[in-house]
Image (tube, rainbow, N blue to C red):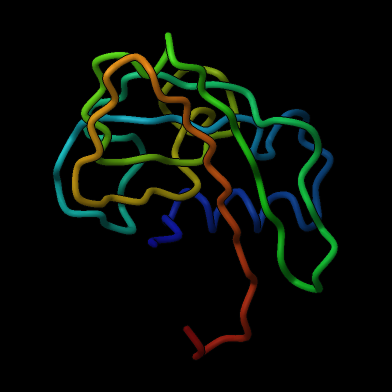
Length: 129
């Protein structure tokens, strides 16, 4: 998993700012296959984006988890290879950039399966991974 430069910038802004709507609100899924990089701002080939389900989970110190649910209609015909966390429902540039992007081997959906993604971010001290 790669925490992107844009995601780091958003975190820095949120730590001392009251900028509206600059927090993770959506999870996007895609079918692209490029190498994940800290400079990514989008998914390679975004297929769908949906709002997180419920509220973020902050029960563990320095950790937050986000969940999104995609129904069988949304997943039908998708050859899923990537997902990412986003602040807005659509858009590019600073607002709309990926906070996090994950790539993996393909998972094919035939219209009978649903998908639930839970993505957890952990803030670690400098020099750890």
